[in-house]
Image (cartoon, rainbow, N blue to C red; front, side):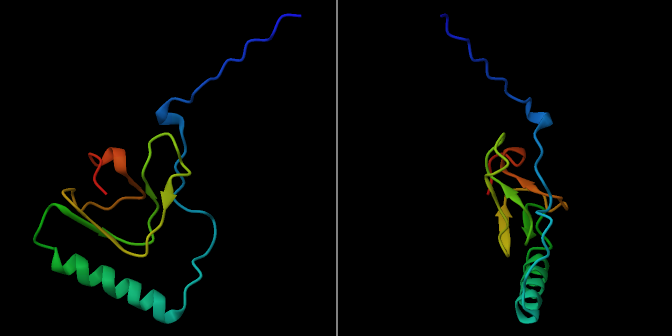
Length: 99
């Protein structure tokens, strides 16, 4: 009996979903949430005159194109060498590999 050929199809990169949320509410204490907001605000203010520093927090950060499971959501993060524009997610490959 002949073996069946296995054909694997990859999705084009533009068809891969990179979620903006996991559908779960953030489980933070009041103190943790307040500290997080204060740290993000303070860092944004500190770097406000630079056009190449992005500051955010609790945002999904994707490190590998094509792999939506390569995701983290750090409390706070700073990336140098990218525009400070607002983003819905941070995708390393769209930011010249900067993390």
